[in-house]
Every structure is written in C-alpha cells, then in structure tokens.
Length: 147
Image (tube, rainbow, N blue to C red):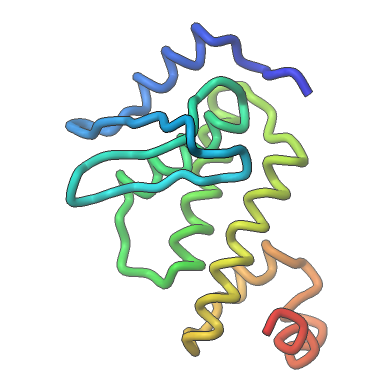
C-alpha cells in the first residue's frame, strides 16, 4: 500500500514530534516490523529509516516511550505507546491501516506473554484490546493458549 505521507511531510512531522533534547538515530539495520527502541540514559530514539507510514508509526511509538516514561508493567507501557501513536496518527489525518493495527496488537501480545511468564497480572483492558474474546469468555482457556 502506498504511503499516505510524502517524504517532505514525514521529515516535517519527525521534527515536530522530536522530544526536547532527544536525538533520533535512523538505523538502516532496523527492518520493517518494529525494531524501534528508546534509550533514556542517552536520550536517544532508535528507529528504522522513517520513509513511510509504518516507519513513522514506529517513530511515534518510540516518542511515546520517550515522553511518557512509566513504572507500569511492559504490556501496559506498550499498550499506552501504541494507543498514543494511533491517536496522533489520526490527529494528523493519517489512517491507521489494518497492517499497522495488526503489528501493534502483535507487539503488545508479545509483552503480555512476557509479563505472564513473570507472573505479572495482565490488565483486562489490554487483554481485551489484544484479543476481544480473551478475558470475558474463558480466562483459563485463553491463559493456556498464550502460555
């Protein structure tokens, strides 16, 4: 699917959303499918080259981490970052595609699974967002499925 944003607009938005006193490193080694990270000690956001809607979404997700550092469990932190990035996408008039939504849910599910292995209670709102049929129908069945 072609990008909804042209390169000039992407460059403008990257600068607009850059957190104050943070640097952005666009690493070619980062592949599509996520691969963003945020280093608080270095005040640096690492993302794949921001060249299309998806890579700009990854960038916004990492900006959310940089600007909204929390002490919440990983699954909640990732959920909040994904939701904020989606909200900002819509605010600038860009449609959140099914692929972006699928990748976002997959990312949060990975953190749900990691937190479950650490015996961290999973927020029902996050669980429901990842899989609408999850906690309300049969919690035991769902727990077995993602364990």
